[in-house]
Image (tube, rainbow, N blue to C red; front, side, top):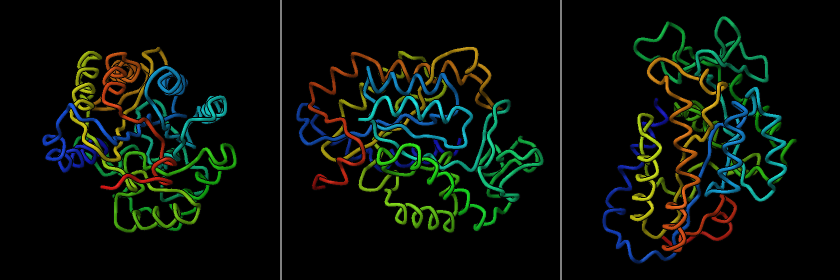
Length: 292
């Protein structure tokens, strides 16, 4: 998926710094650990919260149009120390599980009234499945993004600190990027990569749980001083989650259960503790940025 490619390119940009770090000297390292897609499914909501309570997650990204949004709100309110991002949604990627815009937005939806599945038209996918290729109207995008932000703030208040872009659709063109940045400023929120650097991937959607864990351990061992973030999608492998998938990504439940495994790993926690890595949310970095 294009989101994975975006963060992969960010990780390449960070690779030289990671390679030069002496792994024995973990000083002044702060890390935001993101868990994306709360609101998409109960199994996602529960995994994200457990990965916060018992693991290393510091920030959850909430899909406001998602079918399990209100359940996500309940769980987040029960954990008032967790940082929250509005995971701005303009796509609904799964074949059998869909969500719609909160507003009347004809240019943003397919013939069934759902968000289109892909950010851009993908080879092998049916026609009219790419959001950008359908020429969305910016005024409709703006109304929809405002509705998502305002709904999240109404339910979650000051726990909401930033915005992020589901599948990067809200940042897919210069016009969309400018719009998203403007709305973030207007609502007093930060962008997802404002003042922090992407630390890199840990595994892929073909990885086993053990490989996910090993890759995250290796990433944390190499992390140099600075403000960093990592992003993944926890879930539990349940019958509900086994209904999630699309062409080219069919083992969603098993893959995302592996992310949960890594986020809950005692080996991962040992590296964090030994290296003195501080796990934080976006507000901590906004109030006291490390010199870089």
